[in-house]
Image (cartoon, rainbow, N blue to C red; front, side, top):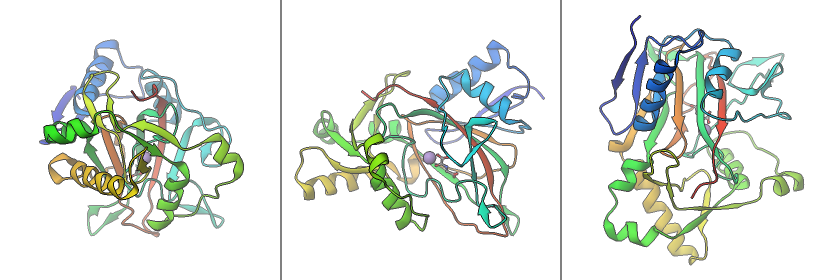
Length: 288
Ligand code: OGA
Ligand code: MN
């Protein structure tokens, strides 16, 4: 199949057909995908039939893979590949059943958050002929550009605190399972102040970098004022004109840029409808 790139009719998203990631992509094909990702922030690579080694080989061309050595949700032979799934075997989840139900960007509570995430759809729930379990993506660059000049000035130098503990509380609120926050986790993943507006490390565009799932407050701001400003920025960022809802097909590999987007899972499915995804991510720079 010839290579084709189709932009989605929104500020983000492109669909690429005809790139087979089970083969080692040549440089022109890889560059086309990479440039499309820089421009469109979310890229859907259709029709893949890949194994974990193909997914990791492809992702590793974008940066250093994040390895989750101690997680029980990774493939034993591939500690950089996490399993997202609602499937159970012998009464136990085979992966994370409820990842990302509140708007967030991956790893924003880390000093060096995830840069790109590569999510491969293997089994997708379908109800009455329609795929469900969509993933929503919002363009943080388009949302930033559409702010008033007054708001841009107001938020330019602010920092906001992102918290893994808050992420876990939010997850329970969204109907997900609890992550026990031990003293060890608190030490390993302390709350992290990040710029409210970050500069994209590749494109130089400005991105809104606060999210409902991870951000607790604006550093040094009165609590009420901070809550109101965050609410305003969250609501603005997820306006329909900035949001792409990805309806999955088995064989989709979706790559997203965690600086230029926020995303969330919809979780509108349950067993016996099964969802199975393999997930890889690359390390990014500290946001600036
Ligand atoms: C993720 C995530 C959403 C989904 O993998 O980081 O948020 O729809 N996934 O599975
Ligand atoms: Mn996520």
